[in-house]
Image 1 (cartoon, rainbow over the protein chains, first blue to last red):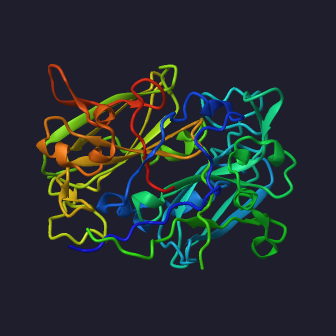
Image 2 (tube, rainbow over the protein chains, first blue to last red; image 1 turned 90 degrees about the vertical axis):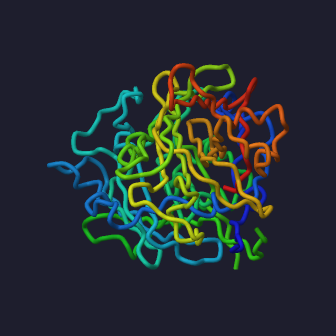
Length: 234
Length: 191
């Protein structure tokens, strides 16, 4: 029987704890019992794959999904998806969603008193290329208030969902913007103990992908779990 | 070189705008073999209140115990109509439901085989990281020797085993209790 090579476990402090009381929604939703360590088996080192055929090429430009231009500042968000060994994660699906420029999601439960934009849905997807690269065109999302605590505001952010090569590499995260004054006050951002790990969720302004007279570029690289070095006998 | 995997962040309350496109509540395509099952349940929080903004993703082998993935090199058949991936959202009552087939057995680390199971990721507002769990099947003799079930203290194993629903053949109930009494067993699977 073939040997199973599992995926690496997170380095201590680099991932959020499930319970983080300052993020109030975690109080009644985080498990109270310790998680049970599961060695990776064939079930965890395999996972759903979505190739180029499963994507709509137009879905990576969120500014061209309607007849008119969405309001707000056009931006290019691009980067690479790599594993912990720096190897590109090829042909992997990335899904994103975000608020519009006014800080409002096109969602029935978003009651924020800010206008919807008929020309902006706020969702997109793409797959990485052979070097692990991806690129979206969108608008810079607005900050918005939320009910976590008195005068709570979320920093501007874009949600990212990635699969990687296996069930074990699934990741959902958020991308933030450099210089956003709300970041230090955001309990969701602050759930992770390690400052360096947290700060990697903040994208970097990027001249190289900035399009003259068109759009500012932001780079956001994403690292998925890498492979264990030592195979286990199965 | 070793980098650190990017930090996980909550899916938040509004993910359905981005993730509905590949909603997958019926995994069974044409010509797929195996026992049809509908799995339904509710996601509840520590107060027993429904979680109306949860996402449940599933991954499983086909009826032969073969994953539709290049790293499964077992000499077993793939079926074109079965990819093994499911994605459903909870409704206002915290309910979710999907139709699939009971998977075959796959190899275990101890050299034996694992009991038929579905790997599950649970996402919701309030969860900064996904929760990983498994669905096992009722009346399955191999459950008693399954290596993952045996990692769990006996009194909590039943949270992982779906239950038959009276008078509804082919329907199994499996709930996700995030916290408290009857809390579902969640595994540390890494990220």
